[in-house]
Length: 173
Image 1 (tube, rainbow, N blue to C red):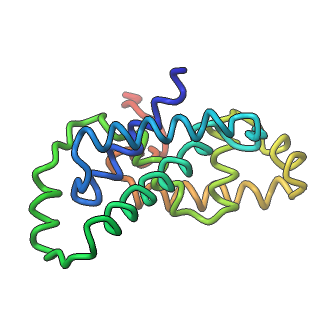
Image 2 (cartoon, rainbow, N blue to C red):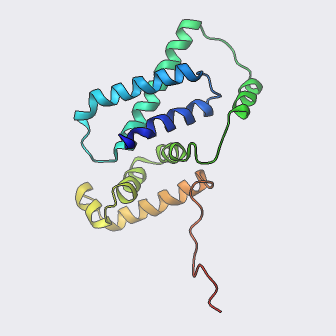
Image 3 (cartoon, rainbow, N blue to C red):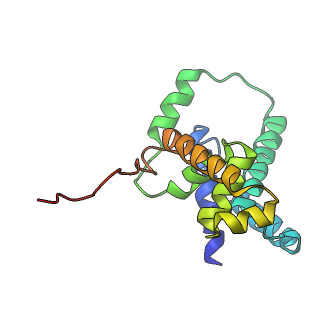
């Protein structure tokens, strides 16, 4: 299923952000475990948000679980900040590789209301009136949350979401 490619993108990006604590084989195991967990719970997906947003949570929790188990097996150890920064700098950041994961990570940092409205508006292509009906809120309140959330996302992710242009996009000479 093409929509589940976000699981790989999310986990690769999160692993890189953490300084790549998992090697390629371990990361593949986490990806497979996440997909198995998603598949096992798929009947519980209610469709209130997107499948990608729903699987993002599985991805993050599975990664945390794996890292926690790994720490428990190998014992806690001190890691110097300089080592983490060096390792993170060494990770390839090819353009486009993790844009989807960055957007979902940015969405996760928004408030629940803002995130929900943005997901329904942009990912499910609903109107504000349809969102208002679904959530039982005023369309004007939802519009305020939507635009406030977009402003926050633009500050969090300038390389992924360029600033919206105001006025004409070409010369009218």
